[in-house]
Image (cartoon, rainbow, N blue to C red; front, side, top):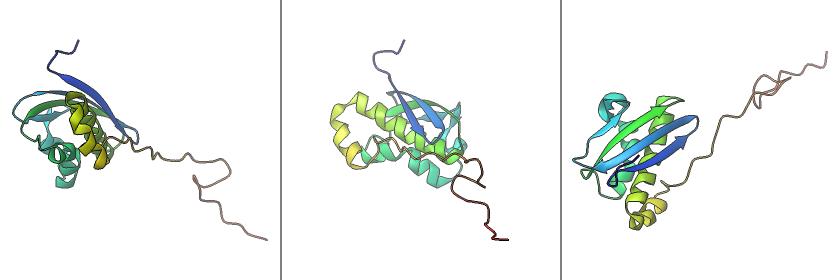
Length: 131
C-alpha cells in the first residue's frame, strides 16, 4: 500500500516502462537503485528525465524512486519523464496545465513497425528484377 504522502505513476515510451514513486524530500532521484547521473550517463538523457521538474520548478522538493525496464536507455529516459509528469499531476492538479502545455503528459505512441513477410523489413522491399 502506498503511504498517504507518496504518489505512484507509470510512464511509458516505446517498449520501456518506468514505475515512479514520489515522496516529499530533498530532490534525490534514484533509477534502478542508482543515482540518476550514474544511470543516465549522457547529460541530454538526464535533462530529458528531469524536464517535468524544471517545467514546474520543483527540482529540489521531491525524492523519486524509479524502476525502469525494457527498451534502450533513451526510451527509458522518456518513460521516466512521462512517469514523473504523471506523478506530479497526481500530487497537484494545478500543475497539469503547465505539464500539458509542455507536452509531458501525452504518451508518445510511436512504436517500431513489425517486419512483413515477403519483404526485407517493415517497409523495405527486396529489389525487383525483370529478368
